[in-house]
Length: 277
Ligand SMILES: Cc1cc2nc3c(=O)[nH]c(=O)nc-3n(C[C@H](O)[C@H](O)[C@H](O)COP(=O)(O)OP(=O)(O)OC[C@H]3O[C@@H](n4cnc5c(N)ncnc54)[C@H](O)[C@@H]3O)c2cc1C
Image (cartoon, rainbow, N blue to C red; front, side, top):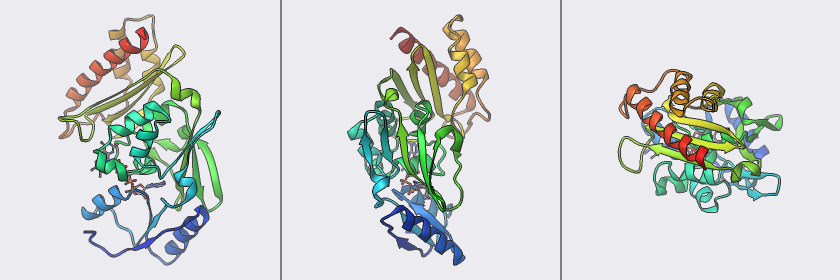
């Protein structure tokens, strides 16, 4: 049970959602955009989230789009992770989505919720960072479209009242050689100990991480070291690990030392597979 009262709103358009947010805020209340609702419900039971009103964006047509055009793949923020898995428009993203939580939870969890949520793993953002995708954001002044690198730095940077509507991917990224590896403390379901996504664009490797630091990231400094092909793989990985941002996670899922050990092995396997492939 949610330990506070809230009102539920179901707008059918982007402008209605934004106006509702503003109106509720003007009444001195706390509105929250609601997508799959899994995190809002889980964290509010723990008193880590509070809202007077939730604005459900799942019924806004633009948020439900899954459109493959020759030059652009558009993914609505309200698509569930199982929809993305089953439609498989971007295999690396489908693989990342398929490793989040369990199948029942993935029927509810949305792409937008995973990218914008507080729970810091946000594993579906890794393929999006590698693909230099664009994000479409709605707010008081209408829609704005930006490269994900301009708005996502550890977490999505939205202005009050804004929400993520869509993600746009250049289809060339959906066919590149790729690997996604998730290691957990135990079993096949659960938060990552370490998750790594890698693609090969022409000769260059791109890599993004979750579970290594308390935020997902892609790092140019790490990629530069991994792509220094004149050096042996082991040296490149040692140098890449020296470029990781801080802090390295050290918690119940695993110590920092163990995480780095696992990461080193994953990177070795990935480099061998993608450079030989
Ligand atoms: C049982 C369980 C297991 C999990 N396991 C994993 C895991 O293995 N890996 C992983 O990465 N994550 C994991 N998570 C985290 C989970 O993916 C996120 O909490 C979840 O994705 C939230 O999605 P949702 O659609 O339910 O979001 P909601 O609960 O609806 O929203 C979550 C937050 O994001 C905001 N939000 C949602 N959509 C938008 C939008 N379009 N624009 C702006 N803000 C928005 C909401 O306001 C809210 O603050 C797990 C969560 C649960 C409950």
